[in-house]
Amino acid sequence: MSTTTRAAVVESGGAPFTLAAVELAEPGPHEALVRIVATGLCHTDLGVASGGLPFPLPGVLGHEGAGVVEEVGAAVTGVAPGDHVVLSFTSCGDCRNCRGGHPAYCATWLPLNLIGGRRADGSSTLSRDGEPLGGHFFGQSSFAERALVDERSLVKVDPDVPLESIAPLGCGLQTGVGAVWNVLKPRLGDAIVVLGAGAVGLSAVMAAALTPATTIIAVDRIAERLELARELGATHTVNPTEESLPEVLHRLTGNGGADGIVETTGNVGVLRQGADALAARGTLVVVGAPPFGSEVALDVNGLLPGKRIVGLTLGDGETQSFIPALVGLVKAGRLPLHRLITPYPFADIDQAVRDMGAGKAIKPVLTF
Figure 1 (cartoon, rainbow, N blue to C red):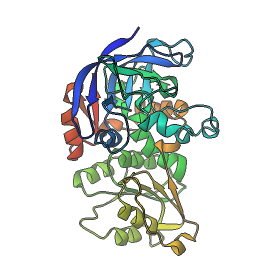
Figure 2: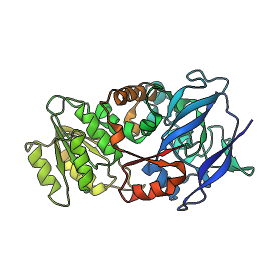
Figure 3: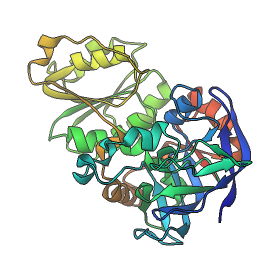
Figure 4: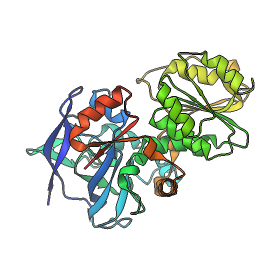
């Protein structure tokens, strides 16, 4: 049987979120019905809601959900009713990258998660008044009191950890941590630079603080975020509106350049400054996403000393092992994600959007 639930619907590109009753289809063999307890609000949600991507609207977004399983499809084996779960992206499970432990680079990632709005077989998970809605966003569409979730989006987690404190692990926070742990892999004495101190950047700072890196530099234009970055493990902070970023990075890295840089801003000018600030054999991880078609000019000869520029999706993590490990660190107090979170009742989703856009909230989390 279908399930009626309340969801935040985006009617068209640029329209506000509107709370409305929608119908969830009956769980398929590889799906579960999840009661959502909390869900993070991410810039990707806002980008799609603005009409910046060809996701079918009207539709339901949300891709950092956390909740409790209520019902499972006939073929689901990894979770059972009553289990606490964090919801992340979905993937096919069969392509070369999925089989190799890199599901964030699934051959069908884009239609399954970001722009398709339907299951892989083309069927709808959501409807309103008998008309299909765009859904299946990241295999979940968690801006709703209940969500029909793809099995590969489900990650069973420790029930002793409050779901409100770990919902953002599904996307932004695992991205920042993964940039450091899965790509940069800092060695003893390395200098790490994080460009942008939003949720992804501050997650990268926290991750770097748990490595042998001895210099961790956070860069942002907002003084309060730089102060928080220091509290979370940054050894130095830079406000580029007050001092020259290239000059300060050159000085703070002992004139040798940065061993690792995480670029989270999506600003191609900042990306170029990051590339120029790399040490020989250093790596720049590109996380921030500018508009499609954006290009950046690079000094090719400057790259020859072994410098690498690497794009990254969702931290390149294997969610079934990566997310539970992060939950364990949260539980132990070693990954203080609560410092980034501002909770909002689900009904206040538009206020959360405004606060996020104004820089008042680093990581809004909607609670149910």
